[in-house]
Length: 578
Image 1: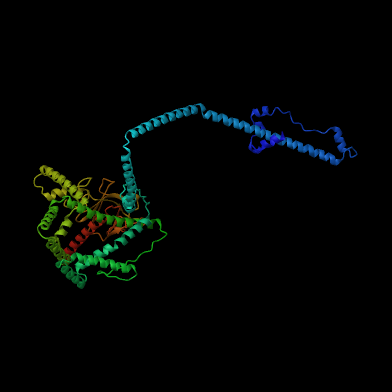
Image 2: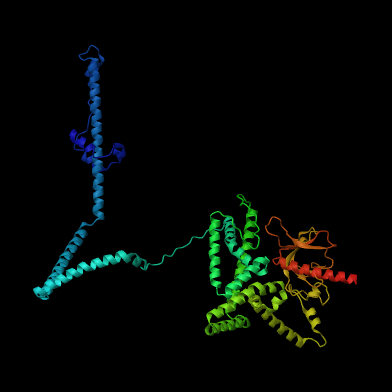
């Protein structure tokens, strides 16, 4: 019995890993009920008395041995009881798993599917055998005579031996080139876009500037040759070019110059210091990039780079839009000249030899580049009258200019229609100047009535609708009087501000241009980056200058006010001198 229990002990886990007897299933109690209850042997009163009595039949050593024996037997019985519990629990768990597996897998369905698959396999084998028998019968019926079969077998063997050799040789020689012409589907790669970064933006702008430096230096050198910046260099270049064109060596000359430039670049890359330029190069100081920037410095840096990018993209867009409008007949009188020139070049290339056409084109290009452009640059009036490419390029419109022209044409039509309707209803004896001066008004009424001016005072054409801004009067202490929102107008003699909140004319401001002592661009909040969006005007009647802030078109307004101010002061000065 003990041997069997020792074998069971190695099948299960430790006692601690399993449930207690109180949590064990009921089956364990019934299964272990065959054996009787285990009793611990007890010593009788007589034995105890003998153990207590030193004069008894036994000694103390024998009593201690009996107690140790009883204890070891009790421990062994407890160990056997634990192993029995482990075995019963393992049996119970295995029965539960077997029951679950039987519930999950349906053996009957699996057997039926297996039988079906076997039946199908048998049917397929029969069909294959039938097909093979039919093929063998056809081959036996179509077999040629014996001699002819031998000849055919020899030819087949020769062809079968020759074709693999030819294919192998062809693949070794041309297989790599054939693989190159194999069509493959295009792989669509999605480029990951980098997040916006001030440092990355400035670095890209610097890279663009460095990359465009050779092109810009080349253009500067060509312009210097055309402007005769160095008389000796331009004279030598003009003489060499005209001789090369006359003798038909223009293309070899340009190729030789390209080879010479590449050779010089090779020597420069090897460490030679070779610098040849007609225009002296000005070394710009390179500012080291700052590591720690404040928020305002980063914002200002982004604004500067964005402004440069805006101007660069604007110039490129103007060039592309002008070329597009030239070829799309936006202005037919300009495109007509190009059309006639192309027809003339086509007919000349058809009826004249290429050498003569090339000589004429080369001589015209040299004279135009070295002589005519030099005269036109020195005399702008001649260029504006007779330089046909320059006139065509300047007269080509961009898309924003076309939109402005169309909107101006629509507004002009509306004005003419309204003026015609007014002329038909106006009283007799009212001239045109009185009409335009009297009835030009703002959103709240007639202009001269709102500002208490004469009827001939009206806004200039630039600011006909006014510039929205806010008037900051630092002499006032009340918040309502300190800042006023409104519209700014400029007339021939006055600077007029119309407040948008109050309907009375008391909150409006009228300043004579002659009384202005100082006018300058102003930055209202120094914390914000940029040059500001305000204009400061100083007059003798105010202690602190009046500031017109939050003007979107600040530069345009400043130029208009300043030019009109200079015009009025010059007229006043000439009148006082006379």
